[in-house]
Amino acid sequence: MSSLSDSKLKMPLAGVKKLWHYLTRYIDSFLLTGILILMAIGLVTLYSATGSDISKVIKQGFHMLIALSVMWLVANIPLQQIMRLALPLYILGFVLLIGVAFFGEINNGARRWLNIGITRIQPSEVMKIAVPLMMAWYFDKYEITLRLREYLSAAIILLLPVLLILRQPDLGTALLIAASGFYVLFLAGLSWRIIAGLIIAAVSSVPVLWSFMHDYQRQRVLTLLDPSQDALGAGYHTIQSSIAIGSGGLVGKGWQNGTQTQLDFLPEQSTDFIFAVFSEEFGLIGNSLLLLLYLIVIGRCMVITANASTQFTRLIAGSITLTFCTYIFVNMSMVSGILPVVGVPLPLISYGGTSMVTMLLGFGILMSIQTHPKLVKT
Image (tube, rainbow, N blue to C red; front, side):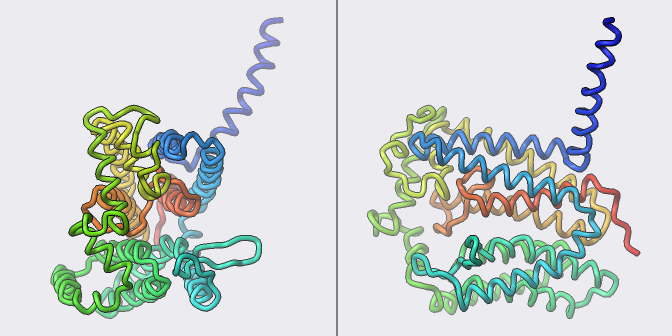
């Protein structure tokens, strides 16, 4: 009798195991674990940053579920299909950016959103993946005959959407996309002489670029040099975030006990400046553990990049990994007062759905590279 019961019990267990294997066969468990831990930290910090607003935490949880679903879907797409999507995705994103330029909604002086009837979208977020994907596809196509002409063509692929995004204006997103594209150029073997020349040209063009910058962008740079010159205006973000980080000390003030956060002195505390909330409540030790988690995720991404089998997979994996690093560095530096305020979220921690989906879409590509059969050029 007991053997019959055991056999009946094993049948549904076998079905569960089979389903679990099907759902996770293209998922990198090590990378996923790091992502989920960072997401959990984000929800805990968000609850405090919003003054115990459970509805906003639930909404962010919903964003995370959507993002994880997108990651799972992309991870299950074979590498050949991802390559075929590069050109159509880039063209779609570019057309949407042109649509924003002509028909986009203006919000706070910037034209960044496009109303497509059922919802609003921000096409610049699509280009964070589409641009490096397109450039990696282009370099893979011309891998055998890479000359200066190919690098110039790739630079044009990068510059066109960056210029459209700068026009919105959205300096933060434009810089991130420019960085992701530059990483592809660098990993594709761009000469150090050319890189040095580009750096010299960029530094030399600063006076010219300054004249084209918007007033609020110039003010952000000046505020970085001396936040106290406009303590209640442009310098307010930097001053308050610096106070929050400094007051956290070694061990922090404790969860939901941060004065800058709970008394609403800290601006944008659930989005761009959520790192200041975390620093105030968990201190230097908490920040060290957070950085360690980020390093573990980055390390796994680097392993996937190193194991990539083709030019395309190496370039796109390397660009996604380095762009993730750039997000972390820019946000933490911005909140700490090292860089100007440019509106870059802290990956997997800051509140927001679009950036979360974009980030996990990139991780999905990395998982596809790691778990699918190695791509062989034909």
